[in-house]
Image 1 (cartoon, each protein chain N blue to C red):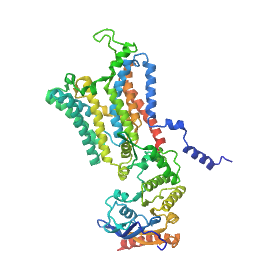
Image 2: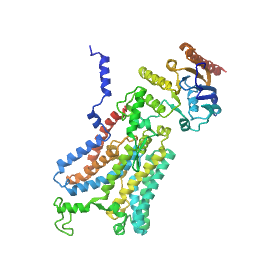
Image 3: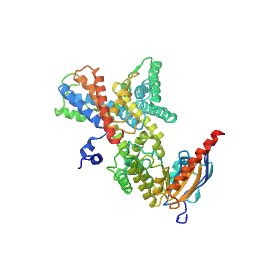
Length: 375
Length: 263
């Protein structure tokens, strides 16, 4: 008697309304990325567990590479949630590195001044891109694509014209004793690692010029910057009024404007953030390598966007997670370095990434539909 | 009019609105009092949309006066009208389906809590108020974190109405809130309108469904081709008469256009 059609429907309807705690805990935007991270680590523990990948040096190696991806992914993530793209990230990395090199080496200005001026210059360019996008209403895809070419062009043209070459070195010498340079190129926790080595917890060099020094002698500032960026961006996005405006601007700009959200300002600020992240990436890289090259940062914009999408953000904006984007970036870094440890042909990196991208995005789409009720 | 205890909160006097050579509104007068639901009926193209957009500050009238609380007002933007207390819930609701109910409810007016030099959005308060306000409207949310996209059409209307009421709307303009809803959801929205009216807010209910209008309306104004066909009190008009008034309007449209065609 209870098996009538309408009765069954009503029961199903009631069930839809209720969700278990377990299900709520699992259904989060980052789930795809979390599953990806677990899969990637399992894969490498099995296939490269004894290669040193999970020793102190190995961990430092893939953490550093992951941190690079994290830095640009955070900017790309916030911008994508605000409903826009920036395809000029890679060119901006090349441009800002070259800007620091030209100002400090060619023009002989102090490194700190070169760094600060470059940040100001690049964030202004980010603001310009954003302003053009919000004023003209053109897709940011097109506007930032134009800047991809404009910035890369200058990055090649300027050093060739001034120095007759496309790589400018000698920045390490110029940065010697500079107060700001170590904030980007330095390391922290050196004392801790010496102590760890003394306690025989981590290995030391047994011969050569650095005999007795720990093999890992500190955590690069790059990693510190990446952690700080993720934490700050996550809190701003999820816990502040401004974060609500970022979601609203990407979710439906018109609806947001209607209730008084300054959508244009929010979007321009997010373009400035991606420019900041690109410049931060470049500054750390330039300080580490001691040189700037015209081809630095190629294709980084796509890597950033892929990390963000693996992290569960919606390409059209209004939905996403900084934590997810950071996990997406870690997948990138671990796979890129892990295949090297596993002794696999590095071209397989791309195959592996493609597969992960596909699976994570399928899972993300499914989860997003549950969360947002999209059909 | 005899029963009315309040003076009108909004009075629109002989409003005309021209868009170039097109006369969209040709002398429409309309008023609404606190605690009443005044229904604005009319077919598509009657000028309902233009009229409420004039009332909510989107358009400026070409001729005519708008009195708000007895004083003549001229709203430069929807924002200005909202600040004065005229809130409009449009058909598309201005809700963002991807975002949670709380985030939507507080969008643009987020409550802030200070922790040292930092200012955070006060989610504890925001969630609590959202849940309370929604409960007042008769909707028990599963969670304030629930995305608006997971709500039914009627529930979304209710969130929009609850938001307008909470933020101090004195006049609530509802643009066809029931037109896309099923039977039960329509009943829910109509009961929400009734609650809002009883709390002393003036409601302007735009619809082209006579039955929905009669369910909650105190007065009924029919608009046709940019003019009012008249205003009737509740109890002074039968559903058939109201239907005839709208249908008569339609016949007139048909008649006029056929005459125009032969000339």
